[in-house]
Image 1: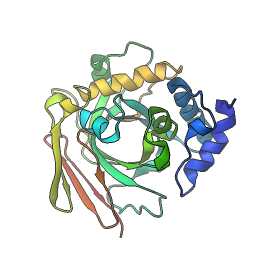
Image 2: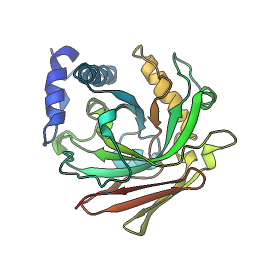
Image 3: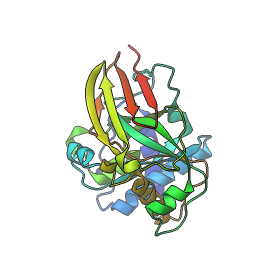
Image 4: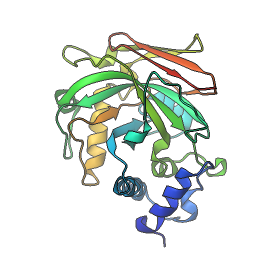
Length: 262
């Protein structure tokens, strides 16, 4: 039977190659959801040991639109590496970054001022721990083999398909803001491509922060001050192609723009 230690090098190699990642269940048929998270976190530990740096975490599938689109009906946790934080003012080359099937999701990013640890973290705790809020987008990269489908286990071990994030400006204090009614509109190449409000994200993006803290607590880990937390897409994702230009505008949090290199 395969174990986390057995599979970390194989998964690391698979995720680094410009080809789909095989179904992990072929190597570990009995793998559970908890095992999948342990494998993801062990992989990230291995990358940190090789010089990478964890800057935060992300929640995936926190809106009903994304759950319907992907076919998985619960939120998931992923890890953010510094190497996947892309500057807003530079075009992103999908080929140079090794993307296979690129997508984009508009999100609220949270910057923590204090850490969050232990089970039972609430949205109120998350709000109190927040230093600032940023307009943001995640670039997804769907790397599983089509035959394996999109499963929670497969998605988690692939780090919930994080291809990168882009953070906009300015950073806004959470004081006096109700993220549940924060509006967002997205344009793809000048055409409307989606709109919604923060309530789509588990009822409140701060609930997404609480989810991340509580999921990490199950594995003896915690959120640290200064971390960036991506709370999940407000609307369904859009597919990206070379030359695309995406702009996301929030009601009070500012704007973020992503250009895809030709």
